[in-house]
Length: 318
Image 1 (cartoon, rainbow, N blue to C red):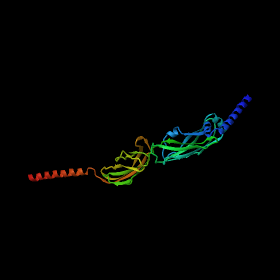
Image 2 (cartoon, rainbow, N blue to C red):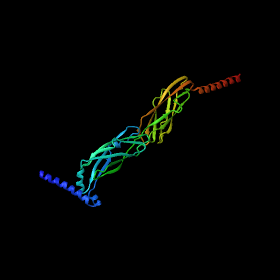
Image 3 (cartoon, rainbow, N blue to C red):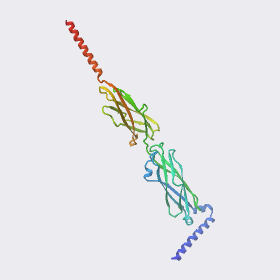
Image 4 (cartoon, helix red, strand yellow):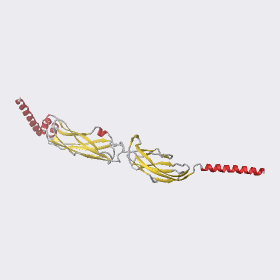
């Protein structure tokens, strides 16, 4: 058994020597065809972490980069020569070349180390992505990565660019202001109107739904149901809140606060909603209320006319 092993070992060594001599003797072109060793790298990612849209201004999404490294081997001389390099260290250099302006990509490690082997090596590293509020909702996101390996003796080097895609999510973000202030003083027979100015701070067309949370007893409050804001940071729209205080007969000194809730949603998918915001307004109703006063005057005048007519008849009969 030992004798057979020594025979095989001697044959391998002899084959390598012959391949080396043959490579040195034959023309360069022919040698390049017969002895062809070259590194290769494949870079990819996958799984839920890449298919799930990335929320702008939210998490720093950590994505796993999967790498495969191996050596392409040609004819028999290359196979024999390849045996001399097994176990040699290989440094795979990674670098990010390009991302959209609204994205930041950071590699955990710029160099991945492995060894030359007859079997393909499976490796991994982490790429961290952060997306800002300018990312287009459900638009095309990408990271261009370059992988390269230097020449290792007779094993040619390798360099290749890979484009990996991801999706930015919808950012439901609005800003609300009360341009006329949040307090009004009115009489019990008057109406208070509050314009509510809404700015779209998100990254897609946004529909904002309005709801009054608390309507005090005997008060009337109505607000615009919804408005839709165009895409683009700072796109604005105005909703109106109308409030009527109680107007029962007598003197009034009423003060109430009313809360309006505003909920943003993606205009193309109203189920994709964001966190609600609120505004609070205060209305003071002060003064006398005389409901039906005009009717009383009319009836009084009518009665006065009737009385005068009756008196005129009596005078005429006398």
